[in-house]
Length: 246
Image (cartoon, rainbow, N blue to C red):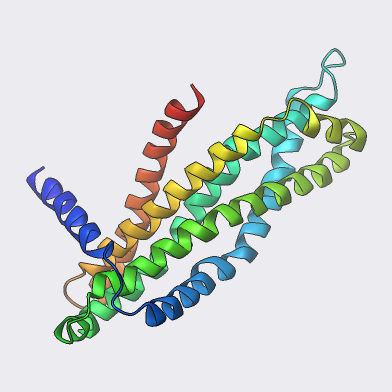
């Protein structure tokens, strides 16, 4: 219990060090561009692959569960759209990115810690926490919402493909996508994604930055980063849903 409280305290102390004004904006900007590529652009392919199959599966399941002539056909597209926007895209993709991006951040910083590269930066008077971690947080909070918007649209395309395979009329599916659309749902999804981005990058960076020992401990830190990020994401998913949708 006390160890857990101490670790939480260490996390917030690290966060205080991270959110400081960068010493040189030119170097910070170059680091930010690098992180946008590593965290954002390199994640597009896995987001597309996962989203298209999620959309197809959700549509097929709705078709099988709503197989009643008294229920209008457009309801399948309606349910698929809201399921993707409200839950599947932000939460499931968030968990996948926690595994991909989170483990990468933890292993990168953990390796730098055990090879004393972070110590070298601090000896030179550089705020290593801000220099190494802040660009990752900004890049994730900027690019993750873009990935989630992409995931929603790709998921809808996957739903249309999956619906065609089981006999859902394209006209009914499109009518369902347009039925009682609420722009607030997209806002909710983006807010939730930005929070998840902060959780993934900060928690993973914390475990990587505080790694002690050798190469084995780097692997342990990467595992902890993914596990704890996923748990916290699920907790905040419930909290944000309760706060923003009720």
